[in-house]
Length: 366
Image (tube, rainbow, N blue to C red; front, side, top):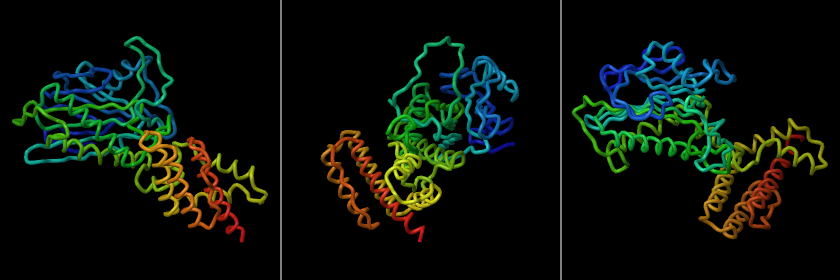
């Protein structure tokens, strides 16, 4: 089906689990695509493909190596493999987000699919993959995939600068959602396999030699990409401000999870509380407005300490004040942070949370 017609005159189609943009005339393209990637002026189309065969199933390669897999996909959707750049992902094309921004006669459109729940990470996170390979070997499919269409002519270097601005916008979206890394205690800056395609229109009378944050073009890129990334993540996995209004989600990257809390509670109480009742009480606390607020402030203190913006002593003092305020709000004994190590802070929050949850369990029994 046809999704829209871009200001460049090119149409955006969705079929065969792909988003496809055939070019009506020559375009300048810069991309991270493994096949026909880099800077090109001879491409006739680009696409984004969902290689996931079904919900909950892993991506399936159609050939022994990624390049051959992409060639088969390109042929299947009716494009020339020698003149097409494509991206792969596990995200559904049904969850695509398309946002357009315009200023005077300049138009920028972002076409985004994505998710970061599984492999969202922060740049510089510890990695376990280091294996120099043949250039023909398999490449993992991307997660947050962006096609950015700029209805203006740009020189090659500025097209690449537009990709940098696009990437900054993606990271800003993740920061505004407080999306956590799955590989460290940090906030995610993207997934480990994101891909981007940026397209410029050499036939446009507009010509720019700047795509950074001081330029109107850079502003439009940010205003198109940032909300498109948020919408795509919401459609794909439900990631949104409402979903992030959760004490447990805020602490997930610091290792505080339902099961570990239950184990700690079960090991340190004589009260006969079954797990379903504990979980019910915990989930009530999880979405409690005041506790989410306290959790957000407490986690940010930990972040500031990790970034060396606050000292351990400063975080200890402020953390104890937050713990005391939260404990008073819920009528439980306030724990105290004894040391200045990360585990000391996390243990104090666990004690507070188990105290609050224990009180709720008692109320549920009455």
